[in-house]
Length: 182
Image (tube, rainbow, N blue to C red; front, top):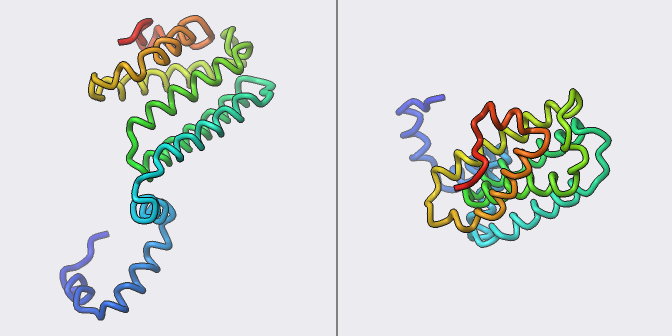
């Protein structure tokens, strides 16, 4: 919604105390904005690694749980992907988004390999999800400064090995995901 010029001028001329109260009420209605301001103004942007580590702990905890089917596992992976997206919204940490997404996929492969070995009707959705997330992270890496590639080389190669040897391999071929990186 666009604010009319007349209203903008009237707001600017309001007493500072009233503007501050109005601003605080408006900010309080947007949880993402509150979290972002807290990160930038209170934490001074110094807690990026702490936030990454917290997400990694949640990923590991979820991956170590017993998942009866690949579908249940995929639901946990999707929830954790949402946490990674929220982390990016708040911190603007693109490096962390890539690192955490690779960690998410690798950790589930390492902890739940038996559910991801064979492609069947139960693992189909999960296989497609993993292949698409892998393709997405490869595209984001391609936009990244190549100097950072060394940071991701070992883990990305391990992820590609899993993707091409487990249930996502058919989707990986369809998406033209490479077998080696970079």
